[in-house]
Structure formats: structure tokens, C-alpha cells
Length: 256
Image 1 (cartoon, rainbow, N blue to C red):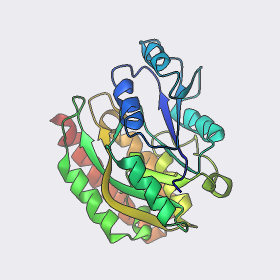
Image 2: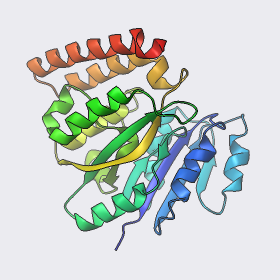
Image 3: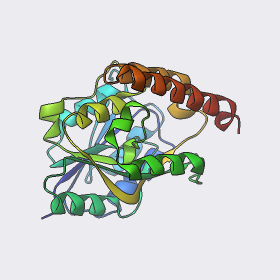
Image 4: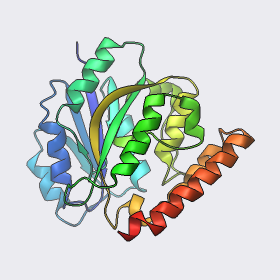
């Protein structure tokens, strides 16, 4: 029997992308789906789009304290067996939910699973393929201890059993730019991160996105997170890797 999958979409003023994101979930026709959209009070036409899907999803629009607060609100609402969150400018690939649902059904001992991710620009065209290949390399190695050195887990391609909320808790709101990295490390202290060798999502990168516009803050947050879990040697390697990665983002990728 396929598990019920709950998808949380946090959003704020993303009318340009959110309908495509919603459709990437609903068009999969997964038979046991719960879709929850948490809007922080958009004023750009997002609410009109959400109203079109009243019969297909649950949505709330009210002020919140940001993305992490919205995700945690959604985690408190979900009723599914498996949960994930998808940012309102990202997408699932067409067979993602069925692939994930069958994986959890066939692997009852699995608690969390991740897959591969494609980077796309604001027009949906694939970009930054080198990052994709780099993350894929580390994913296939399956060495969880390397997570303390680098975050190679793609957030939109990661799903976990809802029961983990009871043992792991919610996302830490102090890490606005690396709350998912902190969560993966917390989970990896107790559970094995499983891997599906398929592209499960598309992560959108464009000039005003967090990854493009705030790479230094993201890496600083990741360093703070890693310092809680790393040995001194691992932390030293993490710092070197972070500095190199940040330099590449600031001087090469973000200037294209």
C-alpha cells in the first residue's frame, strides 16, 4: 500500500512561479496526497492562484516569521506518513511522488531518502550542471560522515517519514539559510540517509533567489551548523570547502 505523502509549500510573493510548482505536485496524480501551502501574506496575486486550487489543496495566508516558521507550521498540520517541503519556485519531476511512495512502501525500515536534483534558471532551462554532477558524486558514495564537510543533499529531492518529527523535532529557526543542512545532520545521527538514483526535483536559481544572492550568508550558516557536529579536522576541511565554494559562487557562477 502506498503511503500518504504530505507536501508543504512555503511561499511569499511568488506568483510568477507558484502555479507551476503546484501543478508539478498535482499533475503527478499520486493517489494518496496532501498538499499544504503556507503563505506569509502575499500581495502579488498569489492568493488568486491559490483560490483556483481550493478543491485540491489546503492553504493558509497569514503573517509569519519567515520560511522556517512556515515550514514548521506545515509540519504541525500534516497527516501523511511521509513528508517533504518544496519551495514555491522549485518543481518535482513527473514521476517523483510515485517513485518515493513505492520506495517507502518497499523499504519499511527506511526513514529518510534523497535523490538527485537538476538546477534550472527562471525560465526553466537547466543551468550549473557542474554542481549537479558534483553533488551526484557524493550522493552515490553514500558516506553520511561527509555531510559534516559539505551539504550534498538536495532539499527538494528529500523525503522523510513523518514520525521523525517526534524523534528529531522541527527545523531550527536560527538557521535561516541552512535549516535543512542542520536537519540532515540531526537525522544522520540516528538514521541512515537512503538514496534513490533518479532526478526527483528541479531547483530554481535566478538573480534574486537565496542561493544566488546570499551565498556567503548561506555558507556562514552552514559553518555554524557544522561546528555542532564536526571534529576539529572535519571543521577545518569544511571551512576550506566552504571558502572555495563561496569564491566560485561569487566570482564565477553569480557573474554569468
